[in-house]
Amino acid sequence: MRIVHVVARLNAGGVARQVSWLVDALQQSGHEVVLLSGCVRDGETDGTYLAVERAILLQQIATLGRRLDPWADVKALVGLYRALVRFQPDVIHTHGSKAGVLGRLAGLAYRGLGSKRCILVHTFHGHVFHAYFNPLYSAVAVAVERLLARFTDAIIVLAPSQRQDICNQHGVGSPHRFAIIPVALTLHPPRPARGQDTRRAARAELGLTDGDVALGIVGRLTAIKNHELFLQAAASCVRSGAAPNLKFVVIGDGELRAHLEGRLAVALGLGAHVRFAGHRSDIDAQYQAIDAVVLASHSEGSPLALVEAMAHQRAVLSTCVGGVRDLLGVAVSAGEDGYTVCERGIAVPSGDVAAMAAGMRRLADDLPLRTSLGERGWRYVRHEHAAQNTLDQTVRVYTCEGMAAREARGSTARGGARLD
Image 1 (cartoon, rainbow, N blue to C red):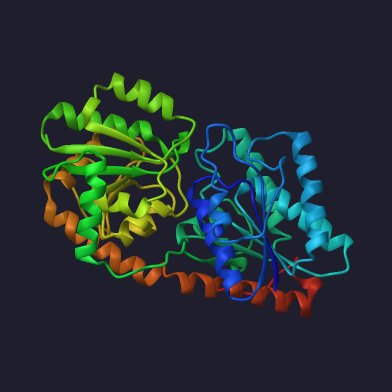
Image 2: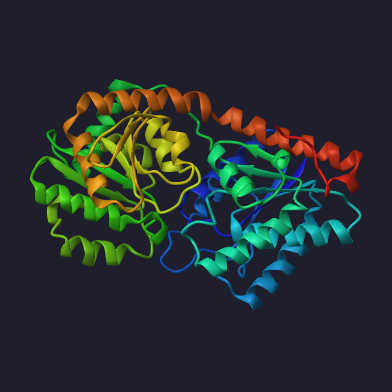
């Protein structure tokens, strides 16, 4: 197949990493693939290397980006349409909200004006109707997605809770058009001896001693990730004195780094208790260095950071938002401190500093719990997030919908092929 993927930008975030992986996997399977992308914004880490190191055919459209700019958006739409005409794809697969709108509009124009039939596939990577926009903009976004869903042959989500939220709650698309395809990882069995060497070296670089318990947060330093909650909870732990050996590591970069590192962490008195490691290309070593991974986001789809943490047998603690509840599993026990121990991690309510701090202290003090959560997380991702499974399911969506389009193009807008 000839496949076009469209993404708003290639930064160093989870969406860019997953899209780059998928394009590369499709290439390795013998398909012809091109990636259309906008450019990163000021303050973001450029992730173009994700495409370059995989020898991905990348075409950047300078006016394609996340911010709303009507004139730039029109030029991006024209650029996307021209790229589609040149490549003549069988499949157009868009990712995220902005690229999803412009990419599908360009795809509809290409499909309507051209002689070649193609299918439109869209992936929701996050719970885009929560926490990202103000209520008015969110209402407009829902209305636009409802309209575009009528012409989208297949809609991919990363977790069951996403389908519940997007389809059932907000009325976007018909249930039979949805496919649940988890984020993918190339998994390797844990190697204790090699891992210990990597861990020692990485911890030394971060200034961690053998007696320290390090909790890390991994992700872009942007508002939706709510690093402020992480730092506020960390400061609460430090002030309590209950876990004197507890250290905190912030892995990632973004437009909020100066505020978080230069102002908030100082104002909270964290000092030597927190280390800002910045963007890291050796992310596997960083997971080895820390003892547990924390996520504080306002909204998530199926966060790659938690999946990667589980793949490294690290316990996880997260705000219970979006697809996080699917990753953590059912509740095992809930205490008076506000956090809940689940099958594969600890869940806290969004924005609850006290519960986050209590969960942090529990992980710091309870080594058997950290170990058991890490082991259960590893067993889960080994079965649910294997790379080949994700690739196979994606190709199945393409071929299933492609067959339906060839056999009965006119019926697609009314029903589409059944994916479940």
